[in-house]
Amino acid sequence: MNRAIILTVALIGLVAGNGAWERNKEYTYKLLGRTLKPSPESNNKFVGVISRAYLTIRPQSDNLLIGQISRAEYGKVNETLTEEWISNLDSRILNNWPLNKPFKVHLENGVIRSLSVDASLTNYEVNQLKVIMSQFQVDSRAQNQIQLSENQLPEKYHSTAFYKTMEPLVTGNCETVYEISAIPDYLIQAHPEWIPVPELKGAGDFIQITKSRSHVNCHETSGYLLDMAGRKDSNTNEIHLVRMNLSANHNLYVTEDRRIVVSGSLERYTIQSSVTFNKVNNVHDNRLTLTDLVNVTLESVVDTTDRSGFAPENLTNLKNTGNLVYTFDLEASIAPTKSNPQQLLLSTTPTNDTNITETWSSCWTAFPSAGSICKNNFSPEYSSVNTRSCGFLGLGKQALCKLYFPGCVATPCYSVFIHHTELCGYAFGNEYPRTKGGFDDCAPGFYRARCCTEQSTLS
Image 1 (cartoon, rainbow, N blue to C red):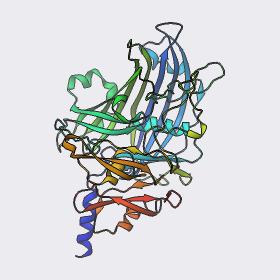
Image 2 (image 1 turned 180 degrees about the vertical axis):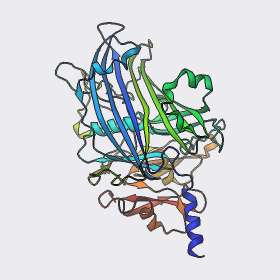
Image 3 (image 1 turned 30 degrees about the vertical axis):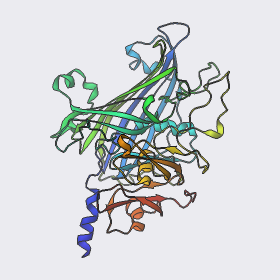
Image 4 (image 1 turned 90 degrees about the vertical axis):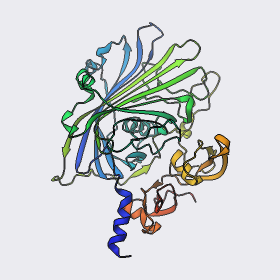
């Protein structure tokens, strides 16, 4: 087989590309967030934090984005809030939010698989980045789908779909219901804030992607709501307002609803806005315990084809922090006590400890390989140590997954004509030079590899 044919076959696995991001473009988004809980002083008064920032995203390839936060600020809330809380935000901002170091976002066919951040960031600052990037997690191709008969998967040239996925976001690795539909004209006219840059529609549509989930259908429950800027302050006892062990506290019920509006098609689109609303209620009396809102809107898309020095500097001292699920800093934690039952969060993203407790995956019917189940259910850092049957008539498979490869990522699917030891170089250059196995969850004739840094593997 000549070289041209091999190259053509090899590129087949890259045709899908990234739905949301186009090379030689720079995307700027405005972020607004609030985390509130009712004040004990009054039924209509809230305490908490509000925050705002700007995010710039620069696609470097189909598998890599460079992100950077700027102009980030936050302030305390201790007042009666109305619908004008966003318009009055300027008067409440009190402090700068030191989170301006560039970071990398690793993609797989448009889905965010992991983040690499500056090694100097604290665990809490890493989780703030995960909060922000969770707003951009769109599985428009149902890659993480749960196999169900009622699923209506996305089809080319169509803007309607319904399916369930097992999706890792900052609030946990949870069952997520996707509902996708074109937005009718009357809603577009009624909500211009949904589509801040309408000229990017082109020949496509304005499409609404709604995602809903609750913490009762999770394989990893982070116990962490979207606290964008909680801080310890000498004038208040409010420290990380939403730090609570949701898995242990069965009196709390958490729901998460997200509306993402895109322009274009499900194959190639621009994220115009993303709004996430979380609510924590007491199961016994339905009393509101906490609410959280994050609002992301597109400010601009700039062509960078003729710009030199486009990629930001200082991207050498990075560490891979795994998927978007909240990472709990075990070393800084204190064991929970009867007097302080909310001190400890459930650890959802493992540390570099090979003795970490194994975790069973959900029940899969699509992937026969146990290693591929661990990768898709958690991240490429996991490997299988055991399996068992599950589901209807025992036809499904669960894998017992354990962290063996911290900081490693997976390539996209490449043709088997490319030797497996070359895949990491194709996908990531010299960033992840070591190949540590791979996964067979690609189409027949294609394969993906696990790629690691020189320091990232434990075995």
